[in-house]
Amino acid sequence: MLEVAVIALRWLQYGGGVVLLGAPLFLLYSFKYADAPNLEWSRPTLRLAAIIVALGSLAALVAQTAVMAGSLSEAVKPASLSFMVTGTALGMAMVVRAAAALLGLVALVALKPGRALWSVTAALGLIVAASFAWTGHGAATEGPGGPIHLVANIIHAVAAALWLGALAALTALLLRRAGPDDFAIHRALHGFAGLGTLAVLLLVLTGLVNSWFLIGPERVASIAGNLYGQLLVAKLVLFSLMLALAASNRFRLTPTLGYALETGQPSVAAMSALRRSLLIETGLGLALIGVVAVMGTLPPPASL
Image 1 (cartoon, rainbow, N blue to C red):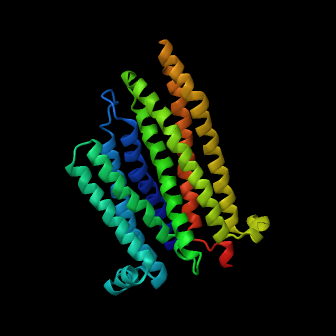
Image 2 (cartoon, rainbow, N blue to C red):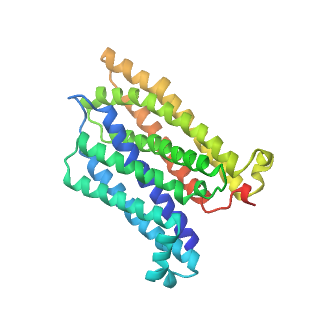
Image 3 (tube, rainbow, N blue to C red):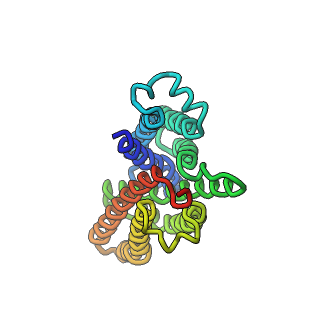
């Protein structure tokens, strides 16, 4: 039961973390003009993400301590929690993550929606995303390759947050769309293409580095022989499906919307197609981080 709780809490933290970084960054680079759409939804959404990360991190600290100590009653003892925080990188990372999320929550309560708030939130979201590297396999590699693996893991987590957080913001925009927002939404979709491509490139490159350390080239042929490898295959399938949808959005659906807006034709059908595609892509993203949450609790093939 504790192992299931650890996985669920990892999934919640990943979900909240990607929104806390990717969504405000998306808002920063997408809406610099006076005709920006109504973004009143952004602050409550980011508040919820910050609360999920903060509470999820603290709950995960207790759950992970319980796994290591052998029981929940032992985990809640001050001595056990103190050792977890001060004696392990895992515990310290969770505390840092919770503190960054709480600071983000304070900013989201104190500041009005705008570039200052999004900048502060994105900076704190960057800390949250980077902290995931210390609660995964990237921090366990020893020897000369350890720093390389850790840096690759940090970049991987940040790139994933850039993509998935922006995807969540785009989905929220289309779900709350009003007719006058169509031009601003199209411009945001068009602008996301460049950053999305960069995020995907970083994910692929750092994913190869991580696989080198966690699987090893000599084990690639037998990758499906254990649960970790099977989940990695599932992750790659989900990633490929998301790439296919993203390519369709960029090269087919977004240009179709642009043409309708330029020619004065109704944009309802184009917006509906984009909304449907983004909802599916978001669902695949949630499934993907669920797979990652499970993988983080399993020993990689290289350690067997």
